[in-house]
Structures are given as structure tokens and as C-alpha cells.
Length: 184
Image (cartoon, rainbow, N blue to C red; front, side, top):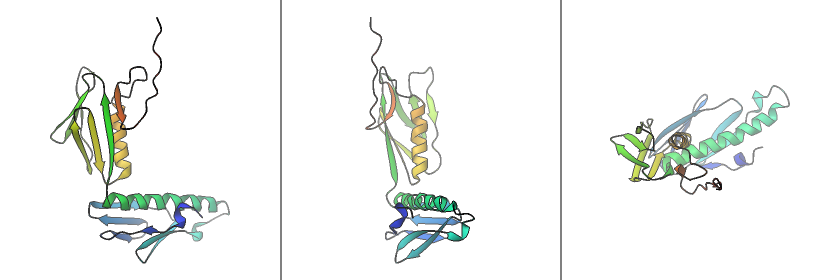
């Protein structure tokens, strides 16, 4: 059995969890998330706790036990993240380093000046909010952990940090290992 799925997942007050044929829905104060799941796992709700069990009926051969164990842990983590997302939400903070590099919001569009000949405009997907508290700081917020991380990675990809000068977009707290430049 997966160690992650050994412990039941608590359902906090104000969160509704429904399990249908191959779909689990979590509804909370910040929104609603749903996730399809494979027949390798079964979910059951008892006493405001979700239990993730392996579905032994889906086993066709003995080697499928490892696959069932793997999916138990995966879906337990996905459900935990869904519950945390609809109650607290997720956020990623990005930092822009470089002279003349800056970010600004124009309506719902993020406009980045990153040393190119043109500004970069990024429209966030639905369910994601972007804040720019300072010209060199961008905050990505949302209820879906995967989508928040994907949007932050896309913004970071517009100008990856340079290992020689350190200029570019990086996560707050990320350490860029600097290389030594050319010796004269």
C-alpha cells in the first residue's frame, strides 16, 4: 500500500466532495475542481474523511499490484491538492532582475519589458489571477496547483535567468548558480 494513501484525507468545513463514475469533484469557498481517475483506485468517504483504496478487481496480472499502489499515492496527493486549492489557493511569486526589465498589468493582460525590441503581452488562462505589486515582482494565484505552476513556468520562460549576469525572471527564493565570466 502507498504510504501517502495510508492516512485518510480530512475534509474541512465548507468543502463538498462528490464521487461519481470516474470523476471526483471538490467544491469549496474559492471554487470547484474536478479530476478524472482510473479504475485502479476506489474512493470512499466516512466521517468527513476520504480514503483512497486500491481496486483489486482491476488487477489482470500479479504485476498490476505495483501499478495500483502507485496510483493510490498519486490520486491521494491530487485530492489533497484539490482540497487545499478550494480552501486556501496556491500562489507562485516571480522576481524580475535586470536594468530596464519590468512588468505591468494592462487590464487583465500582463505586459513584460525584458530587453527585447518589443514588449511581451501575456493573457492568463481562466481561473488564474496575476498581480504586479512592484515593477520587478509578479504573483500568480489560483486554485489549481498544476495551472498555477504552469503559468509561472511560462512567464519565466520568456527570459530565463542568465548564469553569467543573473538577469532574467526567477522564482522568489530560487538560487541561480553564477558562472565566472571571461578572464582578460
